[in-house]
Amino acid sequence: MEALKILVVDDEARMRKLVKDFLVKQDFTVLEAEDGEQALDVFFEQKDIAMVILDVMMPKMDGWSVCREIRKYSKVPIIMLTAKSDEQDELLGFELGVDEYISKPFSPKILVARVEAILRRTGKADADSVLCAGGIEIDKAAHQVTIDGKPVELSFKEFELLTYFLENEGIALSREKILNNVWNYDYFGDARTIDTHVKKLRSKMGKKGEMIRTIWGMGYKFEVNG
Image 1 (cartoon, helix red, strand yellow):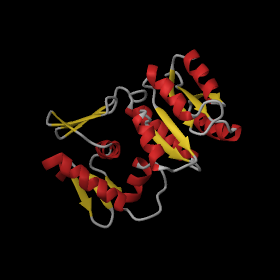
Image 2 (cartoon, one colour):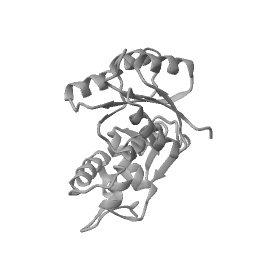
Image 3 (cartoon, helix red, strand yellow):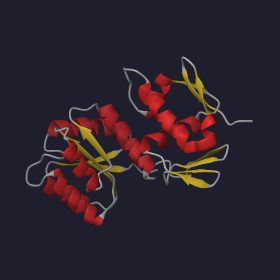
Image 4 (cartoon, helix red, strand yellow):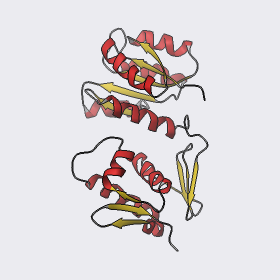
């Protein structure tokens, strides 16, 4: 498969290099732009960009303006990078159709993990993956779940969690393992994050929620009943 192209837009050369180095290691092709105007030039010259990573604060044209322009023509996934962790900014980002919002400073490993997760979700990667078990069907490319043929609305994280369970059917999974694989980073803290998501996921799955079994003192196991 041809390497997917990602456009990284940031006025700090050091930041662009950091992000580029991590993405190139994961076999992505990286294009760079140092301001908003240059970003739009590169974006419209290259017709097959798979994702844009966009800094908010930039000279000539800020990230919001770039995002607005791109959204007039394209639904390409966009990750916004910002130095301000401001809820208003975040809401504006989602109104403009931003897929993910990451505050600086961030771990490049987390950024790469978010890139890969969004590309999976939007069907740019693993496009032919459909998982089935016990009447549950997950279409990874379309980001859809059906249970006994009926669609089930899941949040992005619930979807990833259920996918991970089905991919590891019959295997006891510790909370650490789930956090590292679904949350994509080494998580230091209590495991209530997982427990809360599992509880919501089970309730949305109805009777099928019983397939996610609690293993006391350890974690969870997905098993098809009977």
